[in-house]
Image (cartoon, rainbow, N blue to C red):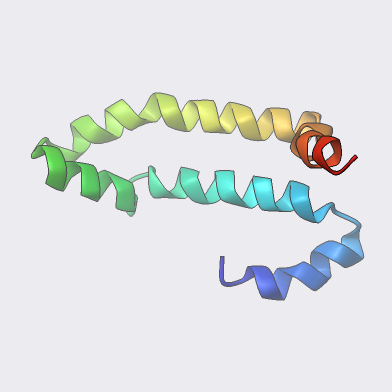
Length: 90
């Protein structure tokens, strides 16, 4: 998230929609939070439940796959990310 200020001029120059990039960035950051070995949310769940980190990682895998599917849909149909803001503003 801290590199967004550095990436913003590059994104604008490349012609990428800022709203689309924001949605993409949030999903990718959430994916990083549930992926081992550094998944911060996995360690929080381990502390809360007391279960093994491998069991928690296996339980988080379907959610990772769903987020991967969301990224694929977002890349294939970029208007999904901008539909609601455009609808609200009109």
